[in-house]
Image (tube, rainbow, N blue to C red):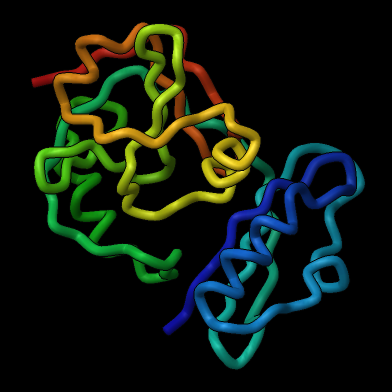
Length: 186
């Protein structure tokens, strides 16, 4: 089964490789020499997609990065399991198709918020940044911010969105992106 990592490359440097290495090790039980495999373009912001499986790295690709504008969300109930960053994303794609006229989805599992289709999330509630205890996929940025104690995991139901002063999306490409405003569509 093929997996992938999305790695931010900026100004010739691949960012946060230790966290990607940790997830790869957890996913397939082995490590790859990422510093030797990733040759980040010298100029600009690039999304590196590293495709791998338990036998090794299958490909390394680079794409110029363009950030999506996300301002509206639709809550989507799901029982999808996505414990590793699988290259086959048909389950996530099917959930994303249910967004209707929203920009993105917020996945709800067993009554609790988990993730969006492309990012972990965090809510600012009572001056503290909280992230769902049980994300669909623990992202590398989420793990880094938990380690730095900038986030605290908490059980967050959809009602937490009503208390949230701010919402942030987290992934390897956007880092910790606080949305200036957001809307939950019904």
